[in-house]
Length: 75
Image 1: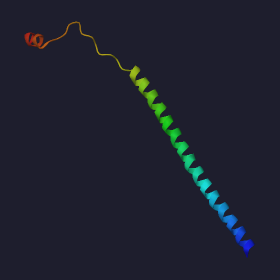
Image 2: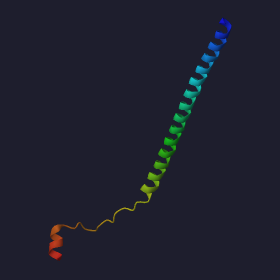
Image 3: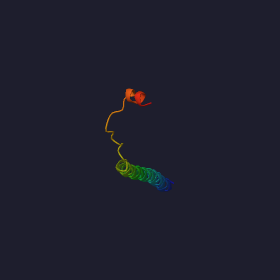
């Protein structure tokens, strides 16, 4: 009786530790996958910001500053 309890207890401990190890491994695997996704999206956003910043055209520069007085006189 004592030997069968010892073997059963050994398998119980082994199964418990194996379950905990697999559970933690899956959690860490999904956590690593999430970090990789965030990194990819971050790099895509930086690339998008660089291309949009280069495509902006500057505002035209006026020869003379227009004031309210100039607008009233011309009207």
